[in-house]
Amino acid sequence: MDNNNGLIALLAFVEVIQLVLFLAFIHQRYRLPLRQLRRVTEQLVAGQRPKSHYVGGPPLVEEVSRHVEAIGSQLEDFRRREQEEDFNLNVLLANMVEGVMVVDQRHIVRLVNDELTRLFELKQSPLGRTVLESIREARVEMIVREALLSGSPRQQEVTMESTALAKRHFEISAVPIHSKKGEVGGAVVVFHDITRMKQLEVLRQEFVANVSHELRTPLAIFRGYLETLLENPDVSPEESRKLLETMRRHSDRLNALVEDLLILTRLEARKIEAEFSTIRVEAFFKQLVQDWERHKDPRTVEIALKVAPDLPSLEVNTLRFEQVMLNLMENAVAYSNPPRKLFLSAAMAGKEMEIRVADNGIGIPPGDLPHVFERFYRVDKGRSRASGGTGLGLSIVKHIIQAHHGSVHAESELGKGTTIVIRLPLRQQEH
Image 1: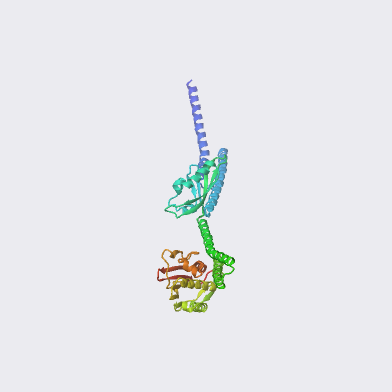
Image 2: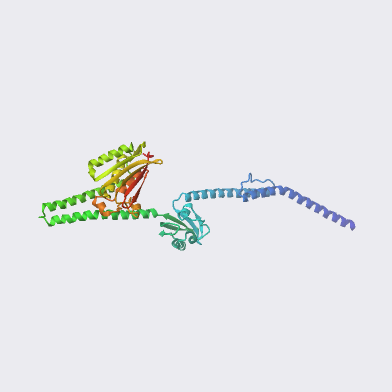
């Protein structure tokens, strides 16, 4: 009996030893492949690309490694597409002239482009904040809210004024983002700055109003005098001549107005003739004065010239530059009282040539000085119209000088005269 028990115990011990050896064999066979498999998965989790996905070993391990390789390829393809989409989206947003904002269904800002940050001069990132917190404009919040609630696009023009921004006009579009199930998950909000367009619209309206005003007076005079001549056929020849002379004077003024409008239109369309030539300013001034005295009464104005010695030559469109100088000279005479004096000077100011046209006239009030180069702006309306002025002379001067890549401004002291200061580059870069 004891021998049987001992034999059973021995057999059990042997089986235990076999099991241990088998487990040791299994551990040894799977340990290295499993470690390799763990390294591969760790690299995939870290976003790295393993040198090889294959792990040799038992069939089960090899099968798992093939599955891991397939998952790795899918992850790599997904990351590549995500990077491409991010790149395309960033390029698209960065090159848009409109401000763009993406919000979720809770009105939280999830994405903006740089243009939106610039438009609203945002000091801190709007990401993670609500539309109202970011833009601080209730009407923008309402547009977004309506788009999210209705599930359809909303568009509206909004004018914004704040301490941080000047008056700005925006056309705002909010387009809902729909999921495949048709649910609204957010919205894309686009801010198109139409401030410049609004300003041009105001200028156009003012221009039309000014032209209408300028035309109304002479046309009313024509009609009134024509009615007088028609209703009074027995009017004396002397009286008839006076009426016709007045009509001719206003006809000349209308013709001058049309000519100036055509010139200004061509200049604003940048259709100035690109025929530049080199001039010596002193000789140009002397010829200008001679031509002026030939067509004007030299006793009406005394002209003094002052040109710096060794002044370099200047490249200009001669006809347009002559037009600038004649406009300034006529303008100075129109706003001066006898004895009238004009001072033309030229000197270098850094790398530019500075040309001054000064008079001893009535001067310009400080409040009017910033506006003298605007179309139809007159400091003394009665004096300007009496001299036949169209109110476009200085505006034409400004556009011609800008077409020469120069600048012009006015300096004046009330009762002591006005100086128009022109600065021009010596050479024109664009022909």
